[in-house]
Length: 372
Image (cartoon, rainbow, N blue to C red; front, side, top):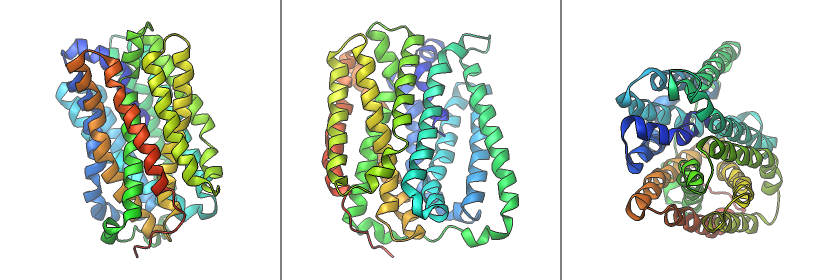
């Protein structure tokens, strides 16, 4: 899921030369995917007819594989079409996984959320690390960078197909329940949505451009991708257990506030810093971003009473949140086009991180959001 999205960032300079695209046009490759994250909420009533969570995951993984195949073999137009298709597939998986966690591991939701988001983050970081080196290996260029992740996607799809066959007799019992429209009237739900949106805004606004930004600070494109990947893996590795412990802490709201402030400080340090210190600040920022991403998903689990309400909170928070996040890559790229300064553009994640910390005060409340 994450590799299919993050792999494009390091390839922006290559795509810019090949297709003569501006920074704003390049950012649209990411923004289009994130827009589809948000818009895919309207498809959930149709998705529910597929069956239970195992069957939905299987179908969407297969769709994701096909979309990545289009990206690998297609032209510029299909590059944008595949970006939209990848966005739809990942969005439905994003909505479904918290429900799967609620259904299958209700007593260990924090740990399981930490595990699967860590795997996502690690694969996303590996995609960044290998994107540029793989692009230079064959005459396929940047397209060859897609091949390993296409293969992994196909293998994952085949595994889930075999799983669905084993649990076929119970799939109807696990069918996704209705969506509670009353969730839009709950202030607590909106605070979770804004928290999710702001952490996505910080991530997508920075991750899409960090390899390019590091090049302007003296790194080669290959080394820049490696730095972003290593710091991302560090963040994911440490983030595997933090949701489990944070979710059980009586200081949840304070922790969410501090995480936002630390992220803001780290990106400000990237603006003014140079050399090896950039790696340090990015590592700390990624640890905090990995934690806030897990927590933004886990909040829908912690503050709902059952899997039906988890699904409603998850769809509402992710659809509204991704609407906010969709503007991030274009906003950062647009500011650079106007000012010709990446330091000015990086003020976007700094400000968004400060707002993230403030929103954590409201999203981290302990009481359940009753919407049933």
